Image (cartoon, rainbow, N blue to C red; front, side, top):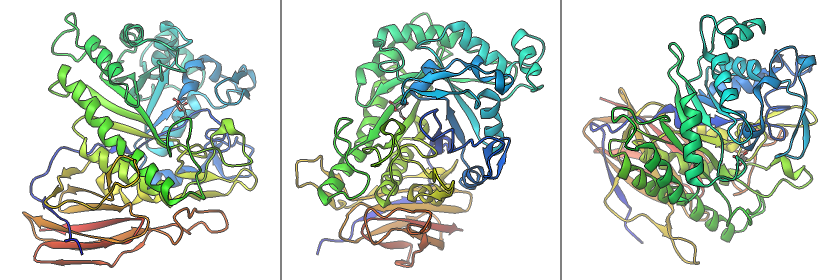
Length: 509
Ligand code: AHR
């Protein structure tokens, strides 16, 4: 049998901080994410605060949701914020052309979103409209949201019942400008982003991080164009420029956007193809970062992966424009793998947003359209198991031996095991994913630099690779105590079951 792969982890050499914002979320006016997911209206029998579902809020508070991106997605570039303020019965309707041509009644608007963020204890990440909106419209939204004192927009906000400005630390300069956000070329968008971002001002104490619409998947030329423009000769050298970060969107499919694959009932070949694609995120971030390093060697400009996650064919029997899909054990491992990748790139990746929070794509929360019952998906449990990584310092996991790999069918070869680790004070958290659908794998971590004791260990797995949680069986895939570990002479050995995610908490001396 092959030797047990061993890695060295120096517990006393903390790396950069893993921003809690890489555990961010995304809520678009799409299908049942906002309406029926977050917002049911005040007259709903489902317990709510001003129409916002209490159970969903409590579940998201339990995973310390750090930020929420809204109102899109593609919807952001056809959204006009003034339609969503003031008395609800006087708000105009619109048609949501991106997502099924449904009528949007604007009953969930700025005040509702900001109240949601306050109830969640999450930072607001608002994306403005570049594609079909004006600079003035965007600038006035920022005024409305964040201006103290006397100004036309601050007065309008007060007239609508909100005295104090809100805190909005993150603002997106449009969404996917290369596609639904306006079909622009990179140089055209770079000029627009510079112009719009200039008028997204930091008012008072609200220091704004402006995020420009970055690349689609492996479009390194797009990143290059934005970065070249951002660090132009006319920009003061002490400032990175009119925006402080650029985004990256990349979803996990079986093959591609055109051949997404099924959420359930997949084959072993589908499983391997999917994880080859999920691992691609490591290469994408590495290569986009390399482009950024060329212009920004001191890493002042952040990379924000503000749309990621599994995207499957729509659940049979649902509106295909609503992007509803089941969430299985496989989705959970896609998430745990992505978080390991984000941890490894935390010097550049300052934020990431899983698409989307409720009822859309790789959702941690699903709500039943008929009964309203809420279900926490396997992906939710990965977020819960990883809480210890929020704002912790990364511990590098340096492999001394080769990891088992999958490389037999033309898919990109990829390791079957992924591990990351972090430290916060006198505790450390180890995360380990086994992507092998059939065989357990044993690993050894040589823990150096501090005495460690295991405080607790958990495992997330299931008998079926496509197991999900449902209202009838809400805990079918949920964390259990993990006992297949040993720790002797500073060497932690883990026997990770097939298709499983394991976390081990360590107390350090
Ligand atoms: O998340 C669904 C859609 O995917 C978003 O609206 C868009 O930005 C992306 O193409």
